[in-house]
Length: 457
Image (cartoon, rainbow, N blue to C red; front, side):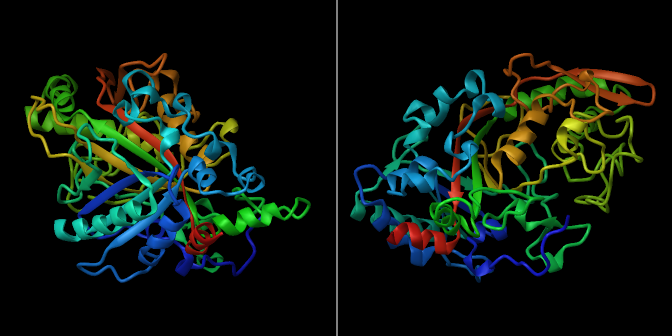
């Protein structure tokens, strides 16, 4: 069944964060607790500054977007009958079991143990071209908070600091990989749909169909509260905010030790790069292993024109558990329990912390602030994290395929074995723990009309 012809997202009502990746090097993530203050007045103060889709992103412009948690909606005074229309994955908040957050990554360790996740009511994301622009935008937000009695939450090791992201250059992350290559190509209207594009209903709320369902949605047999909830979320998205520490020193040591085991006939530097590529499925410059399994290629860096089923059915080029093969198996067949649905998400975010070279840790935090946008947390985010924990969702995979190398090694039953097939047999590499979750929160990123409804209701 196809969607009704002609339906289109009202992009002027969509927050810009959902529609586009801002071409700015700096991001700041401010967390607020509404209790004891006038949260609606705080929203009204910020509403004129919210960046909509297709805004003119010019130097000096203050880019601002707002999200609110389920607890935040309640703290803002949204009626219980409206709140009851939201899906349980959003209202219940992050599930550590599904996300794989065990051990040091468990929720009791999040936010440096300063406050529980339920205290986070609002997320204000600022994006800017320069430190001066960022300071000016931050001052506006903090002045509005002070005026309305809304409390800022400091989640960092040092009090009175925010979670700040800063691009490292050349689109690279701390582990050296090029980021942002395989973002979904979204069709923002039914008339734009073709085989190469992903339906906007996977990311934008308020347009639910039997084929691509999201919630809240209008159900005619229900009371008027259902329509109110739909009005509140229309042209919005759910945002999964993940603050992830990346242990660069351990990662570099791992490549240094295990790389020569994988490729003893290669120079050490080439062996390290080959192992790094096998773990992710691309060379660190973005070259897909399926297209160039032996080395990176400038002509192929960033290419997305490849598949797995016929080009690499046995994982000899790209291991089954390689990160990009797990989170986007493309044309690879899925087990019947997966209903033939490969979830896609829109990824935003930036690295945080200073770069590190070498294998000696300097004791400073660094990693990735990820904002993952979707229309269903359970059908998209949770499905992907389940696949990362156990790569048995596709017939070609076997139990020996192991975990995604970037998954938390403290997940119960996790294996440190990473099998790398080749034409002459498997090489099994012993993985280490490379990441740790510092915090996770779920937010509704409403459309502008929803923000006005919440702020003025």
